[in-house]
Length: 128
Image (tube, rainbow, N blue to C red; front, side, top):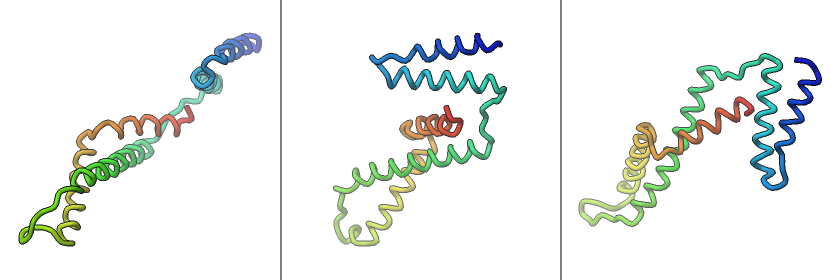
């Protein structure tokens, strides 16, 4: 590619930015421009297996924390009558049980928060 062709390509990308929808258009243009520069430098964007695993674990942990918070709210109104329930030990074991429920839900697919978070984190790490 010669310099004139490169300038024309860059100008056409930048012409996509309009004042009507600046955030959407500019984000698309920045993404296209980064891909263009990356192709020019022959650099491929890749994450290592360890980085991908860490992102997956982090996203799943976040979803488990979110689900724990939601489940705690669900169980907050439930009280057991004595002699078989109640007290501090009931609260401790209930919170541990809710935590395990949330972990199991998140590891088996959850509600979709982890998947969306993974995509966002991959893009952030790749600089897209």
